[in-house]
Length: 265
Image (cartoon, rainbow, N blue to C red; front, side, top):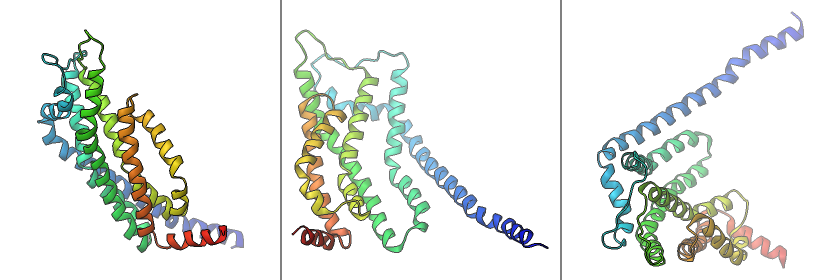
């Protein structure tokens, strides 16, 4: 047998071994996705029976501020049915978020070093809690102020009667915007951990960050200065918390800052 034939035989013999890990990873990914979907479905089933109540709770900040005799309307024939069930499905996803993140963690954990596993798991738990806090802040603090502002500036003779589907889209957009904004500390820790930046470098960019957050608030929130400010100010405070958290949790970040300060001097 020639040397070329021997090499081809060795390559053919090694091929199943090289493909097996890929197939195993795909099977594991499929199982994790199915488990995440099953978890969401388990949460959705009981919520579906209370879909109308969930929508009533979500619309309460607006309903409490509507003029006497005013109410929400449904311009689409099927919206009284689909809007609450859509909200229930999204609520199931939010409630099952820890389970979904756990499946993601279980899939990526074997490929991480021990020190990375010790950092990623707290970050997943923290990001979930911060996302919930952002949604709660939007509902309890932002909604009453924003809706009160919108209703107060309505021209005389204009009855404020919001469509239920449009209100749902507005509320979900606000929930998402504030949930993402409250992830700022986690994003900062990840950037410092990956070596993309340092806490000292971020601290020097405070004025630009503040202006950028107001600009971002203009895109993520309705076109009014109230909601824009109520997004930008908490996000900036979380930016400062993120810098402190990065200095505390990321090993060596303080040494890198000290070395860069010495080089600049």
